[in-house]
Amino acid sequence: MKVGKIILVSPPFFSQLPPTIALARAFLEKGVKTAIACTEHFRNEIVSKRIKFIPLAVSRNINTGIALRTRQTREQKRRLNDFLKATKRGAIETLMIQTRDRQYDMLFDPDKLRSDIQKIHKQESPDLWLINQLSYSVTLALYCLRLPFVTLCIPHPTTIPDGKKIYGVPAQWPKAFKVNQEKLARLKEAARKVEKEFTDEFNSKIERCDKKLKPVSRAFSLTSSDLILYNYPDLSNIDDRSASPKKIFMGYCFEMQQLPEWYKKVIEKSKSRSPKILIVMGTFLSYRNDVIGRCIRALKEEYPESLIIAAAGASTRKLRRFQSDDVLVEEYVPQKGLLPYMDVVIHHGGNNSFTESLYFGKPMVIMPFSSDQFDIASDAEELRIAGVLNPNSFGIGSIKKALRHTLSRESEKALLYWKQKLATRGPRYAVRRLLSTLSK
Image (tube, rainbow, N blue to C red; front, side):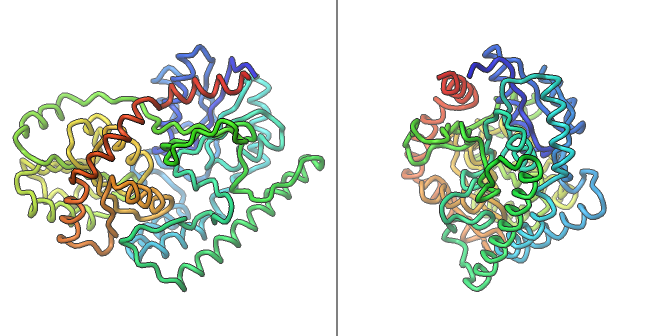
């Protein structure tokens, strides 16, 4: 297949759009006519990158940067608050809430979406669609319409479950988490039930649309039959080009970010301070001001000469009490611009934060709360490139121990290896491989 025109579909989530934009710009560099389909909330951001925007609603949930300040319906706000409160009770409780809500979230208006995509395809005539794995209704629509597409998996690869992996249940747990087996069994049971119901609903829609189409065995595992792009390093070090579908591990997927002058002055002014530590908990989990505050207190006790920069989101006002010449608390920080200047990154295990830190070779302390963050933290722990802590139970002593581990010589060697590996990957590499693979 020769790809001269492509449409990328992004769910309206702040964390999912930047990798999509990075890929879109890599396609444009290769001379491929490119558009991104997303909700109106992100029109300006897409157009500002000189990418064609196509309006398309693919989810009832929206996160435009700070989850608690994004305009939502009353029901969406209630469920978001339930999720955030659950993070204080523990990992299993949080994953159970996410499993419960999955029934509400995952399949968004499939009949209308199929009709909208059919109209867009007729108007735009793309050679290929590139679909975010989390946009299940879009995947279902393209499958029913028999349109060519490839799958983009932005979170951890286990988000596309295979074998005995259960969607919504970590494949492995970091050592810091002592999991109650009875609670875990209930989570597995609930997750299997949701997957069955979701698969049944998928197959009902498929049968109504086209009785000749083959039903799917697992809805959460439905992907392109041709190619899957993973926003993740190939940890197995096996580039299996004979697999079906083909798999391309990008390693990372973002564009470099210029550091604003104001931050450059902060870094310059604090040149003698060490270590320089960045705390980022994502657009949702910056809500946990108790965790960010505990980190700051522990770090200043262990490293009184450190510079700490914390992205506090909606918790900024509550955390301003820590503000000083050597502690900077901001609603938002230019994360990719700051990373080259940092010595350590403390984050929640989100895939963007993980791959960005890995690209710059930065030691990490990971505090996973939900979703795929436990799998990412487990990978980092196994690779010996991060210390992992339970955000609800870590103390000053444990964060000191985690920092000593991640600043060790062994961790430094492992980080250097992966930094060198990721330097050869990224969105341009992925687009080059994709175009080459599909043209054969």
